[in-house]
Image (cartoon, rainbow, N blue to C red; front, side):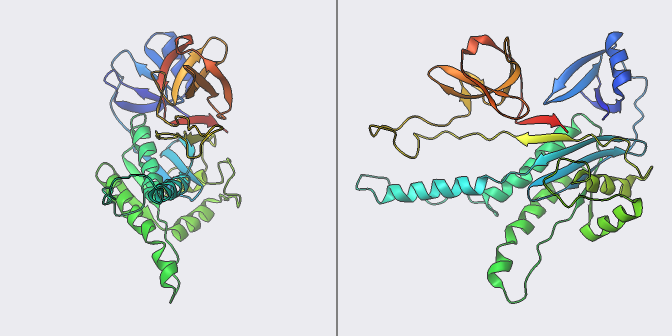
Length: 334
C-alpha cells in the first residue's frame, strides 16, 4: 500500500512508498498526519513536478461487503473493503411500529402529518449507495483519482412475478442515483459482471466463494480487474493488503428508550454527541491510548477499541482525553 502525498494546499499528488515517505519526514521536507486511519504526508516544499499518471478506482458493489481498488499503470496503490450498510431497514421498521403503537394509546396526540421525507427510493437503499459515494469522495482527497470503474449490478427479473420484480425497483433507482452523482465529478465507466469475470480469468486471478472473507480475492480482486481493464499495465497486483472499513453505528436521538425500565420510568436514549464530543471522535487516553468515543452515562463517556469496537471503559471524564480527529468509520488492515 502506497502512502498518500498532499501538497501544501491540500491537493493530492502521486503516492509514494513508505520508505521514501519516512525519508521525507526525517529530512523535514514533509509532515506526517493521519486521515481517518490512513497514514499520509504533506509536503513542506514545492513538489519536484506536477506530472500525474492516470489513477483509477475500481468499485465492486456487494450486498454485505464491497471492494475498492485504487490502481495506476505501474502499481496497485491501495485496496479497501467496506461493510455495507444493512441496519437501516430494521431501524426504520422499528420506529414505524413504535409510532403506530403510540397512536392507539388513550392519550392526546397530534394529528398525523403527511410524509415530508419524500424520496424516490427507501432510506435503506439511499444509505447503502451514499456510503459508496462517501468512501470514493474521501479517497479522492488523498489520491489523484480521475476515473471510476463500477461493476454494474442487476436484479434478475422473473417472468409473471410482479411482486418479485417490483421489490427490486429500489436497486435500479439507487444505482441510477449513484451513477449520476459519480458522473458529475469523475469520468465514469460501467462494466458488466460477466465481462469482468471473463477478464479476471484472462488475468489468471481467482475469486473466493466466501463473500464475507477479508482476503484480497473476496471483493478487491474484482475492483483490481475493473481498474486494470481500463488502465492496463501488469496483470498481477503489486499489493494485496486490504484496509477494512467498518462504519460506526449510532443510536440517533430519541425522547426515551422504547420500553420502560423498572418502576415504569423511561431513560433518555440516543444522540450523536457525548459530553461535547461527536460520537466516533478519535481521542487519546493516557491508559487506553488511541480509541474512539461512544456513548455517555452519568456525565462520563465510553471509550471503544478503534479496530474491533470493543468497549474499553464506560466511566471516563471528558477532560481525561485529548481530541485528535473525527472519523465516521474504523479502519483496520487484514
